[in-house]
Image (cartoon, rainbow, N blue to C red):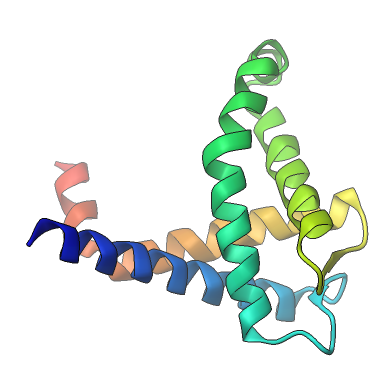
Length: 130
């Protein structure tokens, strides 16, 4: 049925988002899970980050539309970093040292997500290119 494939897609999305967050936190020493945190913390970070991306980020984009237009879209990096800092505030065990580290973490997270998406859904990419 439809709902079964929907839940499988949601599960896969959270899984690769969690793996991307874990890879990014290991590659950056300034953005990390605390030593007492585990893979479960990365799952919580992925869930909270997804909720913030779905609810708060569109509102921030709408409110900062003039700045986004003036900077030709570069202000979206600032919004991504702000979302990551909000996530670090809410999730115990996930720390970001500064805004610049959140900006770098967001760029790396986007890179890893696009890499995984390209490998996981090659047929969708071929359809989009046509």
